[in-house]
Image (cartoon, rainbow, N blue to C red; front, side, top):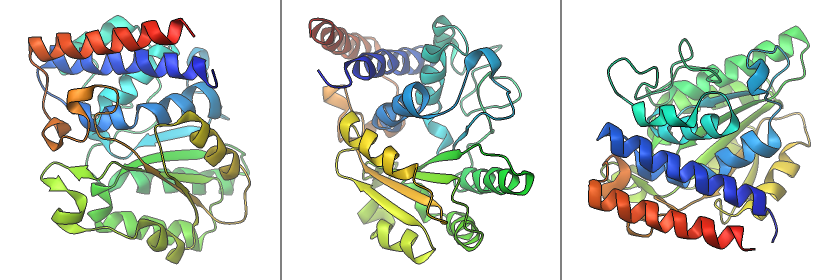
Length: 279
């Protein structure tokens, strides 16, 4: 089965997300689950990143611009070996280093603190520019939500990146179509996303199924080909992917499961894991 190893890892990461949010009794499972597959691909296949040397100068950088999806990043980092998986249950607890949004000062593997929407991409652009000025070869990846594109700062950063031809920058949009108040189209449409990034000087790669590893692999292979301009990878994903009763349900944008829902979700993921192990 193609990309079986990545599918197994993504399933474990989804377990970590559900566990973290359940024990915190707060958090954002929907957008963490929709982004799980791309986070898995980046950290286990694409990025030059080493948990044993998390601050090495030549590492690729990652900025979670949609910082509320921290459970997804934390579970990915934990499963990659940056810190113990068991610590995920401490999310948002007093005394835990796993805050509600990424904190570069206290969490191993976090390259930039984020949370205020629109600011993460600006930090990523600055990192990409720094690499260019210093003659370094690392790449910078940043993940945005589609609702986040409603922030004007996103487009200021995009304009600058296109103008400076930052071809070491990859902007990823998790287009799951839902934000806290409803569908992106109804709240304040950001479409067409691809044409907007093209207008700011980006090469655009659209992925019809951003939860499919074959399509992700093809997209990031294309993104490696630097063409003198930044790249935007737009992923059509499913909010709550991997937990049936959470999929495409706006209520799960920022709601923690109760005990019964937690058990149902974990049972589904356990079953999926067993299926994958038999292949």
